[in-house]
Amino acid sequence: MSTQPIPQTLTRSSEGYEELRRRYFNARVPDVKPVEIWSPSTTADVVAAVKSANKKGLKVGVRSGGHLFPCLSLVQNGVLIDTKRLNKHFEYDQATKMISFSPGHTVQELSDQLKPLKRFFPAGHSRSVGLGGFYLAGGQGCFLRGWGYTSDTWVTQIEVVTASGQAVIANKKQNADLFWAAPGSGQGFFGVLTRIWARTIPAQKLFDTTIIIDSTDVFKPLLKWALETADKVPEYGNDIFMATFYADKDAPGDEEVSQAKRVFLALNQTIHVNSIDQAKVLASPWDCLPSEFEPFVVTRVPMQERNWEELWDLQESFQPHGQGERYKVDSILADPEVSYEKIVDKVTPALLDLPTRKSTGTIVFLDYFPDEADQALSLPQKLSVTTMAIWKDPARDAAMDKWMYDVYKEAEKVGRGQYVADYDAEHRPTKIMSDTALKRWFQIRAKWDPAETFIGHRSFEKSLDINLKL
Image (tube, rainbow, N blue to C red):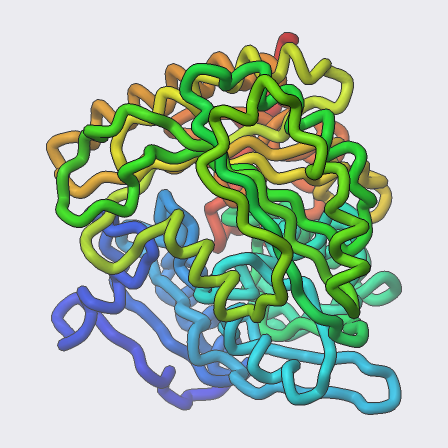
C-alpha cells in the first residue's frame, strides 16, 4: 500500500476548509462537516483517498460541480472527495471521434475543448454543471428528446475507483453490472467516477426562437395548447423549453414578493441544424398561435443564430447564483399514459403560483422510454416539470419547504417519479427507478460496496415503499 500523502487534504482547522465545504450552487448549505476534504488530481490520488477513508472507518461523499441542490455529498464526520481538479486532461481520438474527459470538467470546459474540433457532445444546459454528477444522474443533455439521455446514447465507458480502493474500467462487456448501475445512481453511486469516454458527432449551428405570453389569465388552456403543439415538432435536434416566471423577475433589488403579480410563459425552441431555413421549418408548428392567446403575447423573438455562451446566459437568468440565493427544487417525470389535460391540472400550482419573485417553473420535453436492460435509469417519461423556489432570507426556509412539498404532492399524482438529480428523500420520497431496476441496483451495490463506504444510497430504500396513484 502506498504511503504517499493525499494531496490537497483539508481538515476542519485548515485554512480554506469552510470555503471549499460550501462550494455548492445553492447558498443553503447544511451545517454538515466532513472530517476531511480531499481534492485529488489523479486516479491514484483517489485510490489513496478511498483506502485512507477505509482505514480510518470514515464514510465518503463525492462532489463534482456542486449542483446537487440538497448538498448531499456532505457526510457528517466523514470525508468529501471533491473531483473539480481530478484528471483535468481532455483527449480526442481523431480516428474514432471519441473523447475522454474528467468528472470534474464543467459543461463549459468541455465545450471549449470541442469547439475547435467542430464536434458536439450533449452535455448539460448550464455552463457550471460538473460532468461527473451529470452522467451519474443519467444526463438530461441538450437535444435529449431525439437522442436520449447522455448516459444511454453517448457514453461508452467509465473508470471508477471502487469502495475497496481499486481502479476499474466499466463498459458493456467489462464490469458490465457496474456500468449498468451508474446512470441513474446520482447521489447513491457506490464509487468515485474518475474518467468518462464518449461518442461525438459533427457540430452544427445553433438557432432558437421564443414566444413570451402573459399566461396569468389563460394558463391552463395555453399550457395545454403548448404541450400539444410541442408534439408536432420533430424529435431530433430540437430542445423544447417552457418556463414560467414573474414579469418583474429581473427587476433590480432584493424584494422577494412580486409586485407585478403577472406570470409569463416562455415557449423556447433551440435547434441544432446547418441553416436558418432548416430551423424555421422545424419550428413552424409554433407559427399558428390560436387567436384567443394573441392579445396576451408579450414579445416574439424571431429565429436567430446563437452560440453556447448566449444560451448559457439565458439559462443563468432563470437560475441566479453567487449572491446568496437559496434554493428548494422539486420535480416530476410526467407519466406518458396520462392526458395533457390531467397533467396541466395537477402541475398548475407548481408553475403558476410561484412563491417568490425570482422563482421559476420549467417544462422540458423528454419523450424517453428506456430499456431497463441497458441501465438503471429506467422510468418512462414524457416530460419533466420542475420548480425552483429562490430566495435569500434564511427565515423563509421552512415556508419554502412547505410550499414546495404541498404543490408537488399534488403534481406527483400525474408523475412516474423523479430525475435522481432532484431527489431528496427527507423532503418528498418518490420513485427514481422502476422497482425491479432498483432491487437489482441494490444487489449490485452490495457486491461492490458491502461495507457501505458510500452511504448516499440509504435514502433510496424509501423509494420502494412509494405507490404513486394516478
